[in-house]
Structures are given as structure tokens and as C-alpha cells.
Length: 496
Image 1 (cartoon, rainbow, N blue to C red):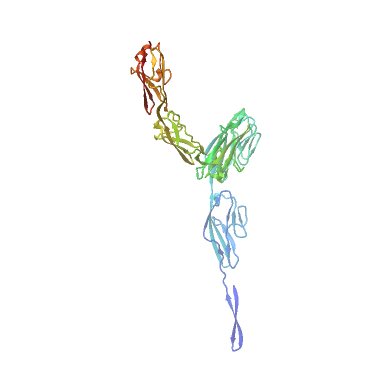
Image 2 (image 1 turned 30 degrees about the vertical axis):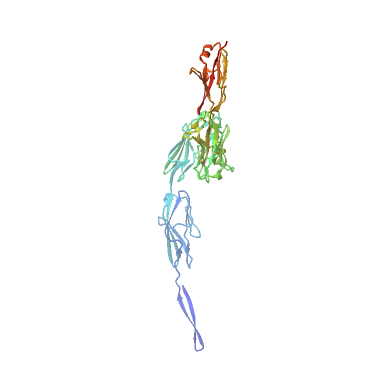
């Protein structure tokens, strides 16, 4: 390429121009990201390889295949776009290798290499490789769909085989049986004779996968049902473990499950929405990293041809227990029953334990017939998964020593053979036991007295006794704190 360059020369007021020819050489084209690139593309899909070139002169893009053949700009297999991008259609393993992009202009060439790998994968059915099995219970005249979702690279071919050996290709349109393009087998108007094993096989040149479905046909359908209770309340804890909500329903045929989130979103089996996963098959809803924002009612719907049933889970934020009672010193009389309240609020319901003064731990303490050894500090503790709270009761046992409040006179005079009644009334806590000691040192305890604290001497029945009982009668009054004695003189008067 030539160019003319002229210059103006001034010499003693005279200007002259001088021109000369200059040879200009253009640069060869430059390819953006020239370094070799490796790319992976799925079997059976299309692959695109870009080749951008810049330069003073426009460049022509040429692609060379791994077999060193120039690729045509347009064919059934290839297409080269105006910007130099190469499109390879319906990839096979034969398309693997190194492709060269050549950018050419009069100044020279520039080359970029692209290494293409074709991704292949053996067949899988419903996410499982090899052989898998399933059992299904259906009822008379039901329409049933048997899923056989096959994946693989290259795409596998699907065939179904019935229990009586008939092979059904994909797609297939028959009488009561139909195979859809996605591999699902539709059985219409099921009969008892349809019982047996249906086999789905998915094949490509890398291997095969199979699904065996054992079909049982029942005469009557049963509406889904859940074990009681139909609603459960569960606590939510910040930074707690994952939560699994089970949806175990029975019915004929086996019910299908649907979860409804608190905001009304429906999750079909196998669906995942953010932190919520509805597992395929068993109906379990898994919640990862649950928090207070997940509170609300979660509904599981179980459906079959006979009807629908529902189970609910209410997730509520948990709360540390708070004991409603207040601590105060409890005073109780000796021998009475000791009851101490310990009612706690919180969620989930708190477990309550008591620690006695002697260190013994009980669930429900009730002290009957208290004694002085039962005094001390009683501590109630309420605990759940969110924490615990305690309440202590100081307990005092009140006792009062025995005191004779009404005693007979110190001297009582009676006639021989006449009856005499001596009263002795005493007070104290615990209640005193009263006994009488006779002059002959005989002691009468309460069981031998007609009324506790009353001594009777009868003339006829106890005449001899009265005769020998002239002297001092000692009243003995006892409780567990003290004993009091009252001496009483009973002289004898002759009856003339």
C-alpha cells in the first residue's frame, strides 16, 4: 500500500514543495482472547464458539475441524455467523476435538484454537441409575399414571413392558394403555387382570436403567386418614435444628401429598422453594435453618380417588418458662399436709421438679403429717428447651408445747361407792395425748379412757378399784414437744 507525503520548504523568500512516495504496510488481524479455550457441551445439544477479530483491513474468518477440513459457512451440521461464531448442531462424540479459527487478511493470518468436549451420561430413571422398584395400590376403574422420567446423554430410548409381556414404545397410543412422550405410562379403567409387574427400560449406548412397578388392584377405595392428632403445635427456636414435618396418611390407593405453606404457597412432591423441600414419595416437608419468620400453620393434604384428608402443624415461637407463683415463707402446723404451688407459663410446656431440704429431687412433692424435720428450703424448677426458672419456699413447722388449760381441783372429796369424774383439757401442737396415772401407779392411756382426758370411777363396777384408788391421781399430758404433770389428791370418805 502506497501513500504520498509532501513538505513545504522556504528558502530566501521563496517557497517550494517537495513530495515523495511512502510504502505503508497494514497489520495482520488480531483475535480477541487468542489463547486456547476448552469448552464442555452436552451430547445432542448445540455448541457455539466465538472468534472476534480486529484490524486495519477487514478479516475473513475460516473454521477448521479436528479432521483438518475447512468447515462450510452453512450446512446441516454447521453454521458460521457474520461475526465469525461457529455453531455445531446436535453434538455427538464424533464432534469432539480441536477446532481452529483462522482470521485472514492481505497482511497475514491469526489463529485461535478451541478444544471441544462432549458431555455424556448414562441413563437414569426418576433420578436413579441401575434398577429401582416401586409398589402401587390402585382400585377398580381408576386411571393411573406410572412415571418413567428418563435422563441421559445421549437421550435414552424408553420402552414399557406389561405383566403379560407386551412391549410398548415411546410414544404409544393404544386402547386402555398409552405411553406419553415423557415416558409416563397411562392406564385407564384398571382391572384385576392388570395386576403384576410393569417394567420401564431406558437405554442409550452407555447402558440402561430400569424401573419395576408392582401393581395391586383393590376392589374398594379408602379415603386417606391420618393418625391422631390431626393438628400438632411445635416450638420454633432461633438457630435451632432443621425441622421435618411428616405427612403419614394411609388410604387405598396410596394418597398423593401436597403441602400448603402459611403464605398459601403450594409445594408438590419433589419441589424445593428456598429453605423448604417437599420430599418425593413419603410426603415429608423439610425446613432448613428455621426461625421466628417461619411461624404459622403448615397444611398437608393427602388425596386419592376416595377423597381428601388434612393434617396441620402450627409452628410457634418458643418461650422460657416463667413461674406464676411468688416466693414467701410458708408456716404450717405440725402434723398437717404441706402443699406448695408451682405453676409455670412457657412454650413448650415446662417440666417441673422439686428439690427438698434434704437434697431429694421429686416430681410432685406432698408432705403429709409434717414434723420438725420437714422444715427448710423447698425449690421448684421449671425447664423447657428455651431455659428454666426457679422459685424457693422457706418452710417453717409450727409447734406448741402441751398446756393443760382445764384441770380438776387439787383435792376432790367423794363418798365411798359414789362415782367421780375428773376432767383434764389440754392444748398444744401437735395435739397432746392425755393419760392418767392412778394411786397404785396404774397408767390409763387414751384407748382405755371413755373420753380422752376424763377419768371416771364408778361405784358398783369399780368399787374395789375405788377402794384402792384413794390417794394421789397424776394426770400425764404428752405431745412430741413436752410433758406436763398435774397431781390430784383423791381422799376417801367413809359413808356412815
